Image (tube, rainbow, N blue to C red; front, side):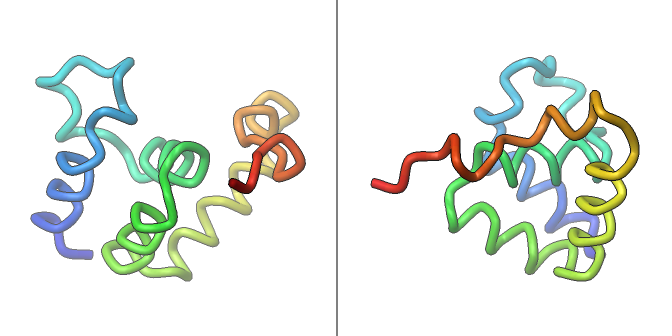
Amino acid sequence: MDNAKYKRLIHDYSDLFWYTPSNRKVNLGEEQVVETLLNYGDEFAVKRLFEVMGIDRVATIFYSQIHSSDRRKNNYKDMQDRSMK
């Protein structure tokens, strides 16, 4: 993974990481970035995520997260909760 592209991805979608202090956003872990962009990003954010990290890496992180614990599973929004407008 290209570290510069990863940092640029975080920068471009920094508003989605509102809960993280600005000076710490460049140090966000892959798991946090994947979870946030899959939950709150638009289709362009998700496409960029796949381009920067690779779809296989994103899928590995996603499946690991949803199978790790009940608490973690609840951090992902159910597709039924999303409105398709």
